[in-house]
Image (cartoon, rainbow, N blue to C red):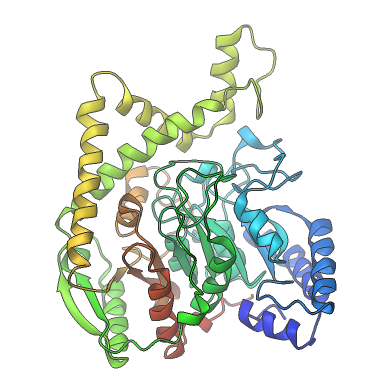
Length: 483
């Protein structure tokens, strides 16, 4: 049962081959047996899961038949879940139980999805390796000595290891697509505003976006369908109709114009990954796509711009965690200043402290214009590059990451080396565009992903291309040894 995709589970439940309760018990047992190797979960919600599974079976018995009805999933541990610990991977929120459900959680629960637990993540979603979590690093099921990517590494590792068919993640600079690439999954970052951020603990509010992680594009379409839609509680949510993503999967790629940016193939890219990217281009050409070289001239400025904007927003968002209202509070503070300093110093990990300091500096008087304002101007130039490119092509294709998964601890002493792993993904967040990573091969036994980018609200186009590619390749069907 654990090998079934979301689509196969929906068909199995509809055909009464098994019940949601049976499936849930199988997967909970599998998590208990295998997750100690991976550390992909922070909290398991067995009682809630079995209760939801029984309710889903009862709804099916009455004739309901939704694609997510009775399907087991997990949530990245920054989506608030009522009465359940929502830690954000941090000591700061280790004792925090959310008093309400995030919109994404509520929507998926209403669709009948079964929540197995909350997945591990980089602290406050800050990281590319899932090593900054207060609960310890997550291991990559393809090689337990390597990172699974971050910050949605817990969700990615759990799905890749077949502990469950799909999970939610969030993407601020590649945090869905990068772990998807490093664990052989399909991961989708929707257009900014397509999925509600209400109840999603913020890192950088103008960049964060929730999305699905699954093994196939077909499964991502099913999960995105349940997540997407306008939310009056979120001022950045877009009031735009949600198309039927599954219905668009089988469109022909004949004549589809795919742009390959020349800037992607620089010295920083592993040549073996470059070869796999070009092999995927050839596969799409066979399906009728037309390939064109394009240019994104301002891509070289993306990392410095991102690492000014994101920490600036983080320093503002995380100022609420002060030891006063909720979250961690230091013992026996001498006065209010001591309470603030020690609660934040003890509650936040190194990477979070680093980004708060960088952000506070960039926003400080005398440096705002030199750093933050300039970074926002670069952001506009990057968006303009994409708008110009999408006048010529329908999809942009390239590598998701410059390297395969690295060894645990290999980049801990050099944060900038870890930041450079986001070079291909952060531009989509700066511009607010939808992006998808799909499996495209292996290097030294470790998975490699190819990234697709599309114009605003064209998630269906990304899913269509990825689904057609997956019908003609088998990379996405490979399973890590031992799982």
